[in-house]
Image 1: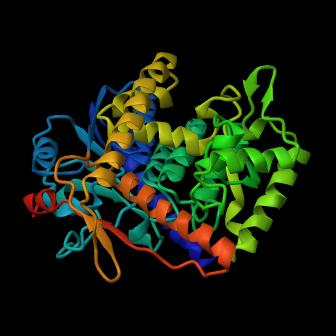
Image 2: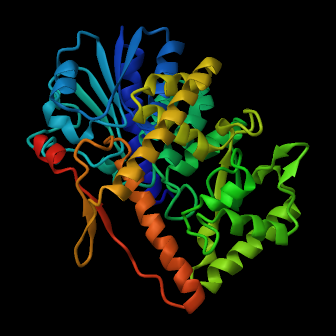
Image 3: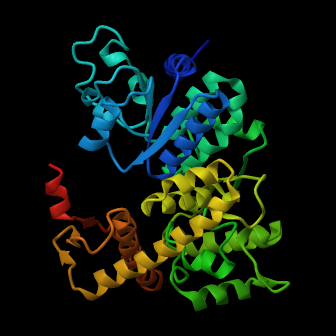
Amino acid sequence: MPTDEDKRYVSLERDAASAASAIVSSKDVLVIAHIDADGISAAAIASRTLERLDIPHEVVFVKKLDDISIDMINKSRTSLVWLVDLGSGYLSSITKQNVIVADHHVPDPTWMTGQTSLYEFSGMIHVNPHTHGIDGSESISGAGVTYLISKMVDEKNKDLAYLAIIGANGDIQDKSDSRLIGYNRKILSDAVENGDIVADDDIRLFGRETRPLVQFLQYCNDPVLPLLTSNNQECIRFLSELRIELKRNGSWRAWNDLNDDEKDNIKISLIELLESSGVSGKDLMGEVYTLPKFRKGSELRDAKEFATLLNACGRYDDAPVGMRICLGDAEALNEASKNRSEHKKQLSIAMNFVKQSNIIREKRYIQYFHARSEIRDTIVGIVVSIRVSLIVILTAVVAHHVQLPLKPIQFLFCDAKAYFSHQ
């Protein structure tokens, strides 16, 4: 007997099938996509789907749906506009006929007011998990919704499921349960069945494919590793005591270069280190997603690293390069290296600005700063996360030595000028 969850999934799939029918019958399509990893993955899925149908299309990336982009949608002369990973919050602003919104964010609450049927309003097909009682923040991403539509177009498009898994990882939908949950499990099953993803239980630190072992531990801040995070020499000592060979044949070894015994020794020691500081070691472990068809040691071989590469493209106004990477363009990967270098440079400049300009203000429960235009709006969240991590690291070190409980720290970034200019 179908569960309530099964019924919700069937209902979502029914909307996806309606969208698929509209796509197949369209003459040309304008695809509008968000600039983050989820949006770029979704755009790649949409583009490949249309390409296989021989339907002419254009892909446009936007940071958000502002007045200019909404005007572009409403005035589009294409037979169909397909929005991916955005649009649900602006449904009542879209007046063009023949629009598909494939999104997972909370919908515009005013959209359904006065409607008697799902598609009465502006000839729009809205495919969103929230409208079926499914949590779009964890159960399925924008790329996942787009993939579902693509699969309804043609079952052969199951070979695009791995891109939806990358999108879900980019939106950190594996966080709460240390693995993907909800409808993402169905998508994961497609990707695994097609040989594009291998799901294993392993350590969940970032950089399993590309980071040398010392940096793998040193740069970890989720969770913070007492004494090791941000401490190069302690990481070297820790690995040396476990008799872990850092280099082999002249090359630095990464986590996935280790054998099972070496990995187990490190895992056990890290869990003991965390628990000795009063932190649960369970956050260290969970499900990880490997893309076996990509070269070993490549950032494309690990879903988290792949998603991070796409995010770097989006943050530096180069989302089309990220989409080309998703579509298998080898040259695009070389172009993306410029984004990674620029990303590191801008982060360094931003962190130095916050540190040296004395702009941090403290209240009883929060810290905040107003950076004006000194920090790119696409990296402010990372700057805040690093600042939080540095404070937590210090707290963790103190707690490790004197057995103090870790205290929660809140940190707020606010660019007031940018905020009020959009109100």
